[in-house]
Length: 407
Ligand code: PMT
Image: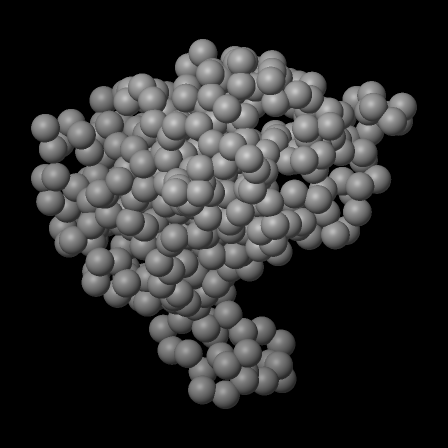
């Protein structure tokens, strides 16, 4: 095994190449990455049937690793653990169905899989295989497991496959993988040391033991913010109304039901956090009196008396310290910018994310949003993007605001 060390300023990438025809693209990827980063290649034995270790050793100026036990192995070092500690990012490209299955199931039976099991850094996997294998429920379940664990999975592309079929399963072009890597390295740990509260989902307000008032929020926007903030290294408290989403990795979740519960959770946490991002769709009204028993449907009509819920964002704005950043959302169906600007100022926010439910691809439940960011003195309209990308953009802006306030 070669030296683990090298230029201090360069980020360290462990590039795991598993055995499929897409290995030929890994040569270009390795060449491109080696110009910017310190790259250590690990080939699986099958990958070494497709491409020669000589290529990667020449490109990276490091021995290309394959075996755990070989004549060249330096047994004074525990290679896979050293690599796991050394890596700023581990990239698996191409990732075969076999390596995905091993990762999902914690199998460690060669240098590639033991290193992946030991990895401390972010992992990016780029599946590439025949579309029948990719679509197999086992492969899909393995990919879903990896995503749940916070591993980044790049979508395979559609096109001509080596077997002659046309379908999904191609490795993305090296420049796309490289762009994703750059993003992940940039993102990594930029929010380390910051404590961030995110609210997400709807609140529900009981009418009686059976019925309640709520809204269509799925929690996707808030969960995306919490997930990305945790990936960027923040200490994240996610205060969530009832939703059907997996808890993001490395996020502390406080489950709440009503607006009053959410207010209590925000009150308990706000003073010792650096940022609060209120993506939750809080019910504005609750029942004045919740019925103890199921209301009978004998009457032709029913009057419910509603009382206003406290405005949590308003409370947080009134109790904001000079060093803290407060970001609200505004969900509108008309006069988006006018209403959003009023909310920004009335609630003492540093930033407000305005989305209009009538815009295609924006608002509730979908995976995308269309938003305008408003500061007290300016605004920026963003294009349609995934909620994850919006989360990333929003967190960068909040981070800049935090840095300005805490110079
Ligand atoms: O969850 P998804 O399905 O992904 O949908 C995302 C979303 C549409 C819910 C999200 O993008 C969004 O717009 N969230 C804010 C929804 C909302 O309640 O907007 P509002 O304009 O009614 O409220 C303005 C701000 O005050 C919000 O930050 C809200 O959290 C806050 N608020 C509102 C009422 C209240 N009683 N207390 C509050 O703190």
